Image 1 (tube, rainbow, N blue to C red):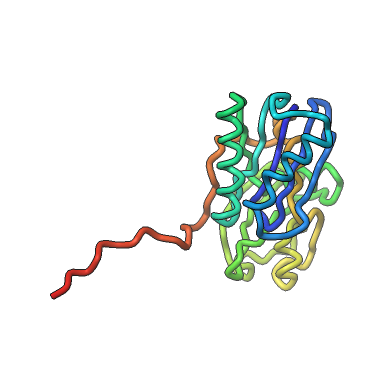
Image 2: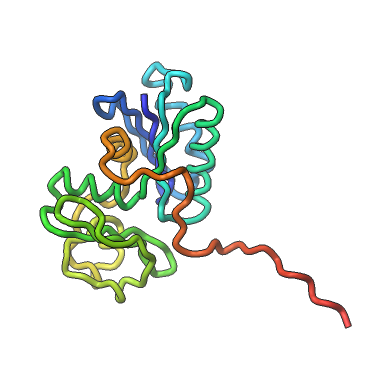
Length: 212
C-alpha cells in the first residue's frame, strides 16, 4: 500500500494507492496549517481504510516547488516514516503531478503550462508537451514576464488571468494523482529533498559587528 502526500501548496492532501488505483484521498479543511494537519490526516486515512502504518509498502511525497515551511513539513514526515518503517520514499515535482492529471483528464490536449502560486506576486512555472512530459522549468518568475496564450493549469491562472487568460484544470495538486505518478512511474522520481527555487526568508545571522 502506497501512502502519498503533498504539502507544497496551502492545502495538505493525502492518499492511499493499493497498486491498482487510488483507494482513498483526503484534503485538509484549513490552509497554511501543514504541521498541525498532516499527521492527523495520515492517521485518519489509515484508520478509515482499516490499516496500520506497518501495512505500508512505500511513500510518495511532493518535493515542490513550494514555500519553505510547507515543504519541510511534508519531506521531514516522509523521510521519518521511511526511516522508521524501512520503506522506500519517492519524491515527485508537484508541477509534474498537476501536468499528468491535466493530460489524463482531458483538461488539455495541446502543449500547456503549469503555474502555481509562489507568493510575492510570482509563480512557479514549467512547460509541458501535449503528452504531459516536461519541456522546460520549473522556474520562479513574475507572471508578466512569462505571460502565455497556451492553456495554463494550476492556481497561477486563477490568480493572474491577465498573464494567463486560458485557465485549465486542475487548480491544486492531488495526492491521489501523485500516488498514480509514483505507482506508474509517469514522471521523474526524485530523492525526498525540497525543490526550492528561491532562498528561504530566514537566514543565519552574520558575524556580530565589532564595538569600537
